[in-house]
Image (cartoon, rainbow, N blue to C red; front, side, top):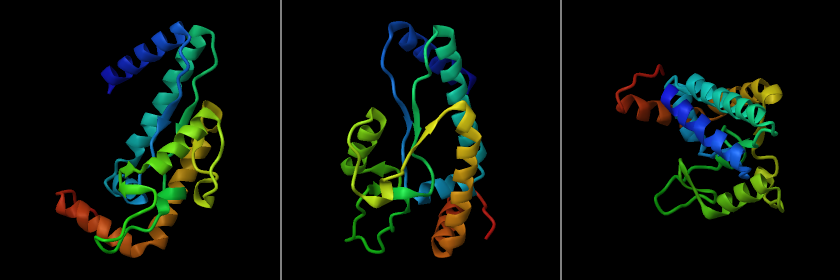
Length: 175
């Protein structure tokens, strides 16, 4: 991970030095994907990755004497990530092809959100995405943890299927 941090730091250092306009984002996935991270015990590492991203961005911005690049977080069990998963092979989702690949309609929204252009009329994405920065980061991470827990409590059938899938992959998750 240290090597990757060094590569990120170098990329940001060069971008700040060249005056490049950069917008960083953590992409969305379906709630099933986030619950898989949660149940597999990887959620704390995911949070730490966000902390490191913000820290590196802010330190490189300070070094360059500029404001930090915006970092948008579209992860977590809310908004379009809560879309009902298809129950048959003939049904499709509006926002996702499958849990980790979103459709163009959601991609267009992400672009408009990070670029600060026109919004979107779908109510489930009106408040989707959060701008990460040092002062609000821990509050945002706590909100996402609460959303993960709420999803688990409100979707017991999904949680049973996710647990079974993880267990089939060789990682034991308590029922």
